[in-house]
Length: 268
Image 1 (cartoon, rainbow, N blue to C red):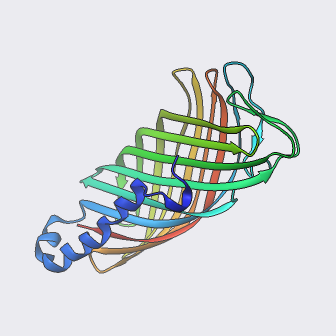
Image 2: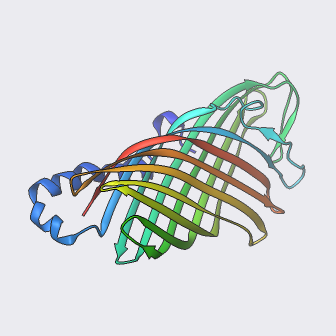
């Protein structure tokens, strides 16, 4: 797994699209206006806090329950890049969300822990890299689309990629990598009290068993939006993302990311 300080993620590469789109708006304003509000991109840093734990089983030993912050010393607060790309046709649209949360830590163990068949001893210094990448794609249909309010229901799929690397001063390195796909259902309610100003609430999630993995997810956000002219959009809000997976194959991972965000969007 790539360390936090040197990673070049899909999110950062996606965010590079933003200045290109802005340049296109300046060079071809008439063509962009003719397209209407059919395509948009939003980028925002997310000041998210982490809370969670994991228990990673091996072939020989059951995994110990490891708290991410207390046991491993992972950073509780970190700014994460996020992006959203959306397409809309009348009342139906496609929304793609990206997030890449990564952090590291170092802690001297006070008790032994088992992780993926590696036993780490008390007083051993343990360095950890932890990364969760999320790719969400949802199809949304607005059943109510009025001047002052909009309501839609969506369904889609998410892929959560979890990477953990533990490196002990005595017992060496152990890694865990797992990509977990699962479906989601959701809804969005948008209030439009003033021209150009929107209050957006969204939530999606599900409790489902996929291929022996029992997955529970809830992703919710409250967002305020203000349009700047026809093409630009300023927004900010608060997001909570809870992800829990229990598997007979590898154990369990439980994470909660939550915090405020603010960013800039463009649309054609």
